[in-house]
Image 1 (cartoon, rainbow, N blue to C red):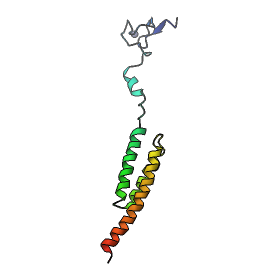
Image 2: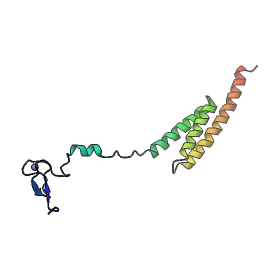
Image 3: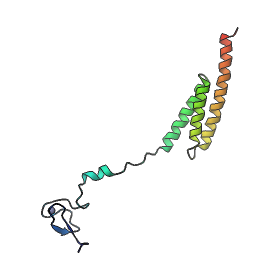
Image 4: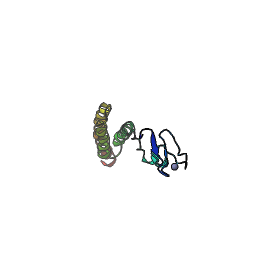
Length: 126
Ligand SMILES: [Zn+2]
């Protein structure tokens, strides 16, 4: 009996299980009488595909920082580029790119320091 019949949650009328609306009061009987409007709010938010955009962002930021380190504040931007490279190595499939970025960011930072020293001595030296 329970397999074939259910009761309207509003007026209690016994109706067949495959009936979508109560014949007496018209209540929607699908979803055990739960209102349809709440079902969308309870739906879980789909997980953001973060990995690829973040990896691309790290590559971009890391290389920009590395290049800037050749010109301005090499220790700061070199470290920022190396940090981006380090973070990038945590992403599967981007490990090599991260290592390359780290190496070049440190290299650019060192070159930036040397170039800064040369430029500084040229500008301010005798
Ligand atoms: Zn009813």
